[in-house]
Image (cartoon, rainbow, N blue to C red; front, side, top):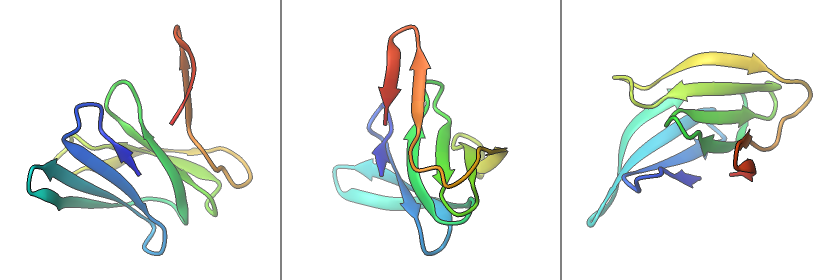
Length: 99
């Protein structure tokens, strides 16, 4: 799971259903707003600095890049990354950053 940078959304990997679940967050709790099919066995996710969510798909050997601002949210690109990815990292001027 990961909380958006602004704290308004929660992103969760739904492993059994192979989906990214998107919840709104407010004082009352959580409300599901979208469910996006991704690769098989999503095991890690992170929101990139540009607000796009990247999902590592363990059994699909891929990473799904999800535009969570689209209506409805959707996978905009799938990267084949090799055997069983398990985490997401972003690097930049500030150095390596794990999510």
